[in-house]
Length: 637
Image 1 (cartoon, rainbow, N blue to C red):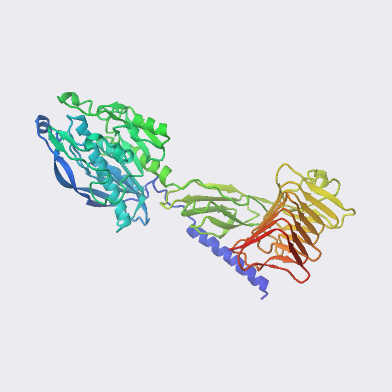
Image 2 (cartoon, rainbow, N blue to C red):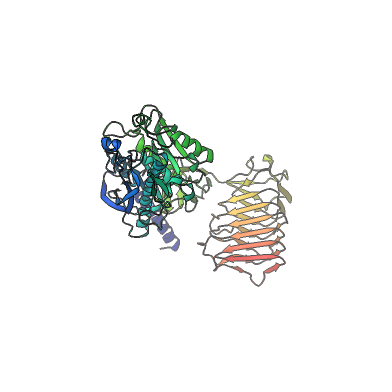
């Protein structure tokens, strides 16, 4: 059996096998974080994340007695308690590093728990979209009769939220039970839980603490310093700040806590008719405190001024405003959530933190018949998984984990398109990028010698200027010698260039020969601008063959890249004279040993830079000559 037949047979077998691999593996992944991709979850209950933290004791009095709430606490008397969380994880999830959302309940720092139905439901619904979630407890108790002391309740919540963040960072660094990405930990909550989340993100330096969180007095008793942000609770060697926040009807003590554009991003949901936590600024519980004689709470700033401050500093944020949801902005009745809450939170985090950046496909979008094998790519490390799809061709080299594919286009197909959908390391789906490919007929366009101006259509045999798939020929058999000058206002693209005997071609503007048959010079070629040759296609050809004379003048650049057969062949009686710059680069997969063969003369008075595999070399037979009077560098990979 002839060797050529065997090679062709194995080639088509490899194509067919690659096509089968495509069908098996090139599939879109579920639209994680945007849709429900899991149907059930596992819940790990009462996981201790903070131990021995001081909670103030109730102070008694009429209002505590009648309500049962710790609203008159003694900051100077505390009891050490442990804090717990419930953790929800998607059933069947194999992702090794997952984002986690910590959720804090509401209740004015006086009541509530991690078991509140809407907080649990929110956690479960977010888990079905691919997040790990955790509902947490935090310390309750506040003194509503002293604005300075009331700030200590918010600071305790801040510290407990940071303890929850540190718990997951410590787990990721240690036993890794929950497979959390420590760089993708988010926190959010409702009402006082929103206070916890917001202050976690923006009260991030000890010097920003209210003075009453330091040593203070209450009723003549010394009140202890609450210590720094991460000095209470467990895992104190980790930083407890979250990466992003969602806020349901929460507020900040001071909007000035938001200082820079690179702070945790924020999405808020708040209704203008909220009478518990103001949408704008004011005292919380405005609908109730008129009943409490002697009440004194600090002014707080709701979602609207928070958003304004975020906009002022350039912080990415979104404010969802309503007019009729009251304080429980997320609850639609007593057992369901408003339909926009979970998608709003999930898609916001996905869009800004998890989704890969937009990509664009690079590669040849115009090809000539006979140049059907092409390679396309997107930016390296732009994603972790690539869903490549093709119409009008098939894959030769393809992996869902590679940013690059090699395809074989079917020139008879009615359409030719290539698309890729990238997915991040967290399996968040990015935007699909696509390109349409034009498969063009290849023609020979012969210079008729009528005019020296390349840009004159009548001087060409096709009656049109040389184009992408034209093999440009200055023929040997013309009766008279002549000069052709390329001097265009834009880059000229052709398939190949042949400069025949007794002719001279001067390149005064950029000439691009992509996916080409290269240049063959038997006459004289002068390069005074940039000539770029890439990716040889025609079998047994060389990107640059010189049996005449090629001159690269001081303004000229000759760039040759990624051959599949050979780069430069200076034949006997051939001359390359370089006074400008020549760049030769080969792909690491290129296995030919001969980078350049000099059987004629190579004279360098300019700059020559060569890069390629170490096995390649320059071959100079006995009848060849190489003269170097300037820079000649070879970089071996």
